[in-house]
Length: 411
Ligand SMILES: Cc1ncc(COP(=O)(O)O)c(C=O)c1O
Image 1 (spheres, rainbow, N blue to C red):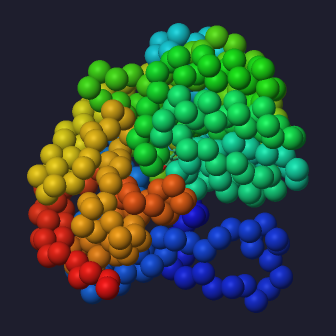
Image 2: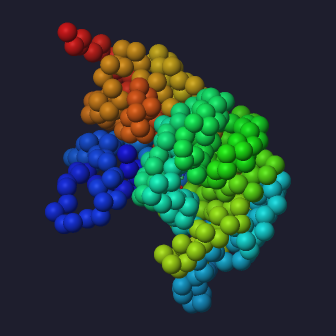
Image 3: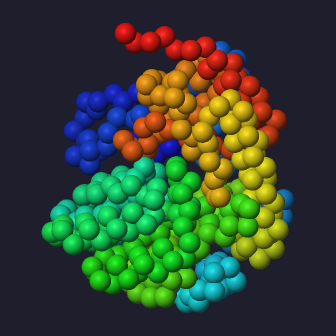
């Protein structure tokens, strides 16, 4: 597993003496698929790409207009402040208050990040070192595991697809493991499994955090992409959450600003300060025009976030209905921009990597094999609903065509 976005095709060993931490990163499981995708594209073959969770739609024009205006001002081209400009941090606190009823201090409890992934990785570095252990959700969005690994921490993966069981297993782990986990990472709505929770989950999590003295990092990347009246709760809305943890949000998904690289870490003052200390050494903040445009986005483009979510919902329906018509067992997710689909019985034996290769090679549809998210993802595929409904219907037809023929038995 590795970042979904950094995609070397091959894992050539280094001939220079790289650091141990680089060697600790395992071979890239999406490599084979990305290579084939690339070869097809070079050969002029159309690929319907449901592989990465990379939004293809443009942000609200107002946001881009503000960016252009801010670009024209020469004062905005200098290094910015590492923590994020004041008005941006204030806007984040207003949004948290309005959406989740959580009061935050913009000076001490909010920090802007160069995308939430950057912030998350550096938070791991700020909190962990050799001998420290983190509980991570499994199956895993790769950086949840490798942020810890790069910080030289140990990983305990707990299946997060049944939130109640996750809490039970977490309590058991804290009771029996010595030293106890120092950090617990949660990510609901969850990438890749799309599992969601209600606020009660966080109430219990905070109680456990206080009982067993661990810190919580909540990755809330899909906060804005919820469907059918479901509203994902913020970890910080649980009583006492500010005492034990932080939450990461992003403008990549709801505002379709993935390439702009802007996200936030909010919550526990000392954790935010620790992250700020690391970032103060590593970076000079986000390009200021991006920060200014982000303020406008949060102030004036909430309707655009709603219509982005509505668009993903209608794509979800197209894809889930289509796959069900092919006989696949799929649950319609309540949030995220993914469908987490069980590989049909007929093809299950093949394994998720080979089955994903087949869909790409014979069907022209790229998907992510569940195995790419760790062992617990085996048996599943993750399909991103980043292509439009017309392309998704076409994807279903192509998947149907290439999976019609019964696979040859292995005996
Ligand atoms: C769970 C999760 N967290 C974080 C991110 C990265 O967000 P950002 O673009 O803010 O770095 C993603 C993106 O795919 C994600 O799925």
